[in-house]
Image (cartoon, rainbow, N blue to C red; front, side, top):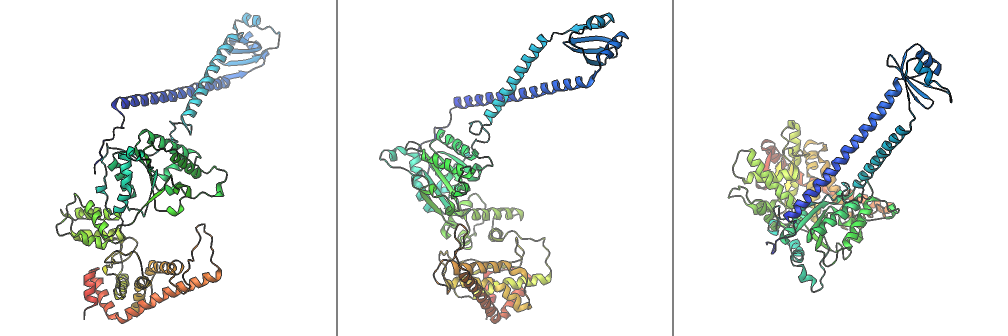
Length: 609
């Protein structure tokens, strides 16, 4: 969809030239004052230095010694200022002495051949006083100018200036066709596009478009991308800023940046203001900072005030994104502010296929590559993960010297995104490699043996990321509900590695630490959140403020039930592997040799007669 009308609110050439000259003038004035300040400091330093050096070169002497030296023709000149006499010897040494009131020494000095100068001090004092007054005025003026320039509330303050980046039609536009996998969100945001393109149609019938839209979703689901697509479809400017850029150590800076951001937005209306990670400034307010000096709270208050200042004629829409809507202040979510929430879930299989097709544009891909198969293997991937998958495949293809991206590179990229690249530099002994192979095959056999289990896609005895091996299990279809039996099957599959170690080697290793952590987490959620234990259908979680409403007796029962579920999963894994120990040995020894087994080969070996 293309904008029906171009955005003509960009500055005209004459306005751009005027702004350019204004900036040059401001920079010139700033440079002048900086150089002038440096000159003042230099002048003060020279004067202080001269005064200090003069003091260091002058020797104090009694008046009688100076007169005796004059009588001996050792004094060349003398400057008399009141009762102070500054004498200069024939060798250049300066002497300072003091005469008594009414004492006459002029005639005596002149009689001895000394050149005497009488200084009344009035002219020099007036001149010096005037110079000092001008100097003080200039210093005060410079300090005032600098303070005004760096004032927290000033428009020109570098601290108070908004850090938002503005995108407009001069940059490549992103449209809805460039965003896939979020079709429901597109439908919700279509009316925002219509309002920005045709505001009078809504205003004439008294409709009020939402001032704020809150995008809620996991990282990588496309919140920023779809916000830019709204701006691209409407043909309006797009201001992008992160919530953390409002938070500074100086109180008031964040509020000033909010004011500056919305001032810029009004100058370029209609437009979209996008605030990413708004939970950085929009968290729940409490009484911990009752004095009102908390920087985050002042920033939030200013944001609320700015959004309340929108009227029907102000074509500004604020879009904010977060993956933590539960921590946001209720004042942000009330009608009239962020009164509409759009949820962006991780894409289903159709969404993943659409995302892969979008990011596959312009990439040389072999004709036999099945993107629908990739979409089936990438359950749980976000849009960013899928984009990274294709990029990793392209990089891998280039490193291998190929011209077309093939299925092996794409499948390898899936593993890279899930667990990281292969760590070929890690040296693993034969004994450890054997333990890793049995561990991973133990996972795979238990997973494939549980009723209704998801298929195993790949088993590897290769170090990736922090893992020494990997077993990939992917569902054949997207699911949004999990049965109790399915959770128990997942727990048993996770314990298959530890069970294989004990069954084959009679000992256990630290390689199952992540498996144990995962199983314990699932068991705790089954007991405390899902009501899948003898404790009943009750929620047994900590309160949001961190308080613990659970009694010690109930906590002991929770721990007992969690331990029971974990041990039950382990016993299930031991039972399955004991029955199929011969298959465990055969498949594990094969894995040691080939290092990688795919799901088809695993099933063929496991279920062979």
